[in-house]
Amino acid sequence: MNLTKKLILLISLGILSIFFLLLYFKYPFWSHYKTKNFKALVEYNGSNIHGLLGRQILIHKDFKQYIEQIDKYAADNDIELIVIQSYRNENQKISRNIVKPAKLSNHLAGFAIDFNVKRKNRIYLSHHLKKKYLSKSHVNVQNFINDIRENKDLRWGGDFRIEDPVHIDVPLNQMNKAKWFDFNKNCATDYANRIPKWKFWK
Image 1 (tube, rainbow, N blue to C red):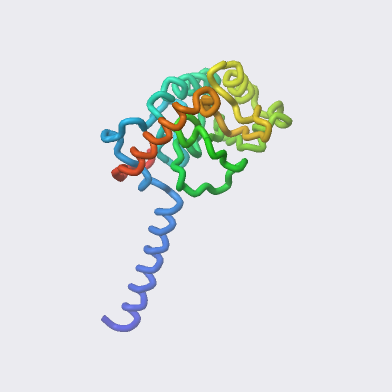
Image 2: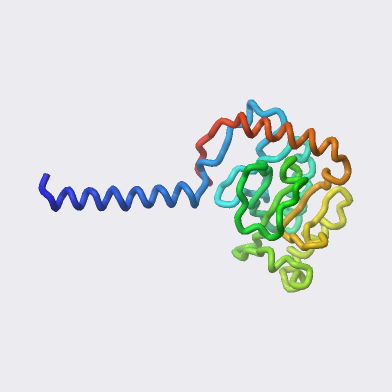
């Protein structure tokens, strides 16, 4: 093989390597885990709730009934929720967060989701969902948020002292701290024993 062919091969391999590195870090099809061995965490697959770029949605099994209701509200209002974050491990680094993560965050117990709203081809981000701008959003988006706010079991982060309009949770950390610590421990144990499951987004 002459020098020119070797150079072309090296450049091609370099481009392919950069492509796969970008794919690895930008599109987390590699981030899925098997859940059969989990005792607390479960994977949620909803009709109107999907993970960003195909990410897996992990929640505590006792939160499932609540996220199913959230999913129903989304379906009723003809919108889709793009989940940015569901269960979060204590050691997990967070980027682009709206507010400083709480020490007793319900994400750490699998009882919260962070999301963007998609309606048709439009995405509604945190600044669109803030109280002062919400009235400018499509009526279906407003109705969805109102459905969440009217549900006595759920909290919308837009009502927090420091607004977090892309957050929905069940306030386990306030209702029952002992249970929060128990769920947090069980979720962390599951996550520590996770087994990768390679899955490509739809």
